[in-house]
Every structure is written in structure tokens, then in C-alpha cells.
Length: 193
Image (tube, rainbow, N blue to C red; front, top):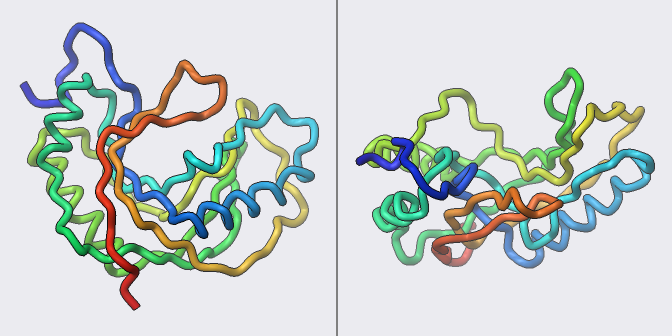
């Protein structure tokens, strides 16, 4: 049975493959998020914990645990694959109308595009959910249950963020704030120059 077929029993919601920032990148993003606090002092926001910050590479849909494990067992990332290093482009609110997400937008990288293409091929071979459309590299910093007022000015910053691990994850819906659980981790090598 392909992993995307629904079956009885427990399901892991919103499974995905993600790249995790290295320690310096995680600290930089957490500091960036902290600087956003004064923009919405009254809003009931869900701030992503620093340990849960990630760059989503591929959504897989809602899977049973055994299907997720079977699928990711076939996800081979070659030893020594260079880590990614992406340039911070700015803070954006998504969607443009009635935004509920605050994201750190990142500039693409040819190696990232290659990864995304390979993950797409892998997901199709595994019978996993396919989500067409353009991939805009980003890290979600904040979620809101209600549309956010758009501030007159968003903070500016410059930096590069390194990503040194690829992980299969799912969102833990039992947690009050956005929390994620990992199922497999692939360590990447030093970032290519």
C-alpha cells in the first residue's frame, strides 16, 4: 500500500522533509524573531521555538508512522553532501491578504533547487503527496490564529543562514505552541564555498 493511502489507526499530521539551521543560524533567526515582539504586543501569537526552526523542503501529507519510516528509509543523502548556506532576504507576512504567518525569506541556491528536484522525484517514487507550485525558501517564525495587522515597517537585517541537517518531521498537534518531532536525521558536511 503506498504511504499516501489512508488507513485506520494513528496518523502523523503534516509530515515533511526539512533542513535544520546550524547553531549560529538558529541563534541568528531566534534573535531576529525576538526583534519582532514589539510589532504585535497584543496579538495571541504562536512563536516557533528556536529548536523547531526549519526550512521545509517537501511536504509529504498525513502518514501512518510505519509508512513514514518506510519512505524515509529510502531517502539516501550521500555522505559528505555539502551543507546549505542561504542569504536572508527579509521578513515577509503571508499571505499578502489577511496574513497569519511571519517568515524569514531566503534567497534560493542552485544546490537547493537540485535538492528540491531530487526530493520531488523521490516522493513520486514513494507514492507520496505531490504539491505543485513554486517553492519559496523560508523559515516560519510566527503563526497567528487571526490575521495580523501589517506594520508600517518591518525590521531589516543582513546575514547568511547555514543548514547542516536534513530531517523527516511531523507537527505535534497536541502541543499548545507549534512543536515538531523528528524521525530520521542526515548530517551534512561543511558548507560549499
